[in-house]
Length: 230
Length: 410
Image (cartoon, rainbow over all chains, first blue to last red; front, side, top):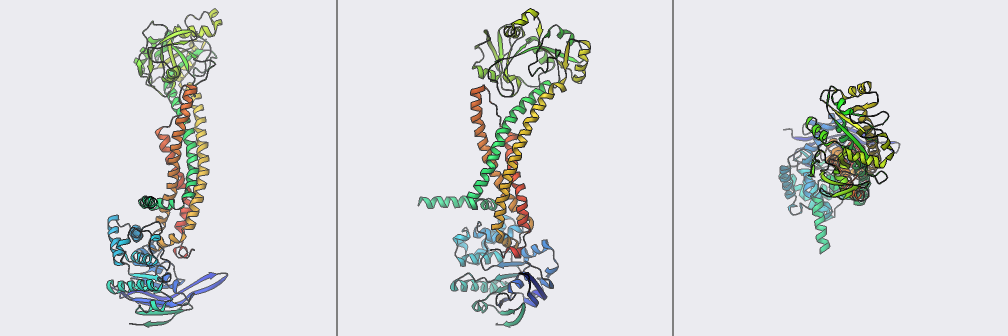
């Protein structure tokens, strides 16, 4: 098995915005080891989220290549990219992004529903994922009945349930108070340690980044520092 | 406490529904108004459709009845179902019966039961004078395709006079049953039989012996007495054998019998088909209005639903939903809105038809609407299909959203 979950080379991405052109990524090279926990920090507009979107197959670079778990995702068409997102990547968003009409259990089942996993099996796996994030007692609650921290834990369970090669988290503690934020990042750290789950976390919060073994800093679409803390 | 229990029950109900149905219930007022719009369209479709179905069954029965028949009547008398005038000698029946291809013949006099009264819908109530011997013979050699079953009693015996067999709507209209007596134009008739519902011509028919029908005709048109109407009849029906071309036979009859004219099955059925087509077009018109109004309101609802849920669509795509998954979810949601409108419209339509039939029964003695299974299923399927069709554009819009852009939506 390739020791690197992500191998990205020469990523460039520009956007047209308000008549001008914004260089969101300006030649990014990155290799992420399997089982690592990486933080990406940087000011707004530095290209963190764009990089995350490209690594997760949500967006395509103008130039460069991303090999995710052995698959060159920059060469894939829409349908194949959908399969990659479903099977190889889990997403955790700042605003939780749970489906409000679904219960916690159903939200966690969602990726498996799209993967056509039989209902009995997906229920079992979703219950296990919710147990891992400590929410066995809240499975039939809807997002509006859960606290922010609980919602984010449901989102983490949803990201983990397909046992993806990589979980990408974009400001996962941005909407949480400091105590809850600490609990959420500690949960991610535990999952990384115990399950060997690879995480790439975009954050502004140095406290969150401290939990990661590697911290990348971005500026003007480039990685300007790459620091290993452990 | 009670409110909390009620809320919990509501929550349980919502969570028991599939996701597209839960989405429909997110904006209950908006969905309710859309569903109401469709329900009104389907209500109109069901009520007018029920009217058309009644006519359609009546016409189909008439078409079946005429499929193997040739009508012979006086020159210029017109269609026997639409008040044919003029008389021909009944003795002609024996000569016509000998024509090749003729299975049997039936002489007939048809008169309106209430010449100035209120008529039932689709077909007026008529007195039909028949020769019961001929009827029984024809039943044996060429059974009537419209099955006539007796609810009580039976045909009168040959030679009996002032007896009658009544179709179900005539019996209801006159409030008589087998064994009762009823008077027509001052002539008393004993009801010896009543028929089960056929949904076609016989329901509105008051069958009497040919001679009695002739007496009623003479009472109504006394000047006919001078014309010596002894054995005269209005029509002679020829029932043709299988494999005989009734239209060809009808064309040949005036050549041999210059004082009469004849209509074959095609000519006889023509006016029925025309009137039926008018009703079908009426229904099509209503369906089109329902289609436009209902379709536009569903499109509006679904466009708003997609606009509100762009970020959710982005999330679903991020976790692995294919375009087809999103398309299917939104189509199902739109079809469900249509289905709800269809079911409510059908329910309202059935209730409306019952009420209208009640008034029709009071006013005209017969129901004038008929909700058939195909109408009921067709209306609901139409509504659901309309929903799905109207949902196609918004659903395609949802399916085509790029996940990265959708996730950035406010």
